[in-house]
Image (tube, rainbow, N blue to C red; front, side):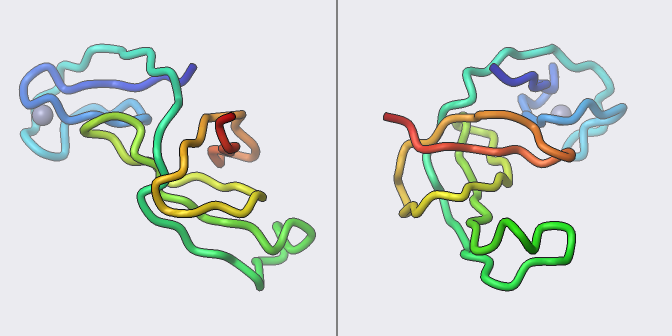
Length: 102
Ligand SMILES: [Zn+2]
């Protein structure tokens, strides 16, 4: 499960709590529990990583479509393709880690 927030006015969804909606400037949000399952929208394979992640390369930076309105950038160490089903695994150093769904 992941925590998300939805703007009560325009329906904008985000994973990080905000004071103002970037779309409509409304300041009232509802908390959503989302399952954390989605599809790979796009991805990039990182072969040469910044020093902090050097021991993890190669890895994938994935854009995951979590809900109709919410896409999130995550990280995976498995081979993937656009359209693959993935699920949220954990947060590591502030990064969202995903894994392939079986
Ligand atoms: Zn809004």
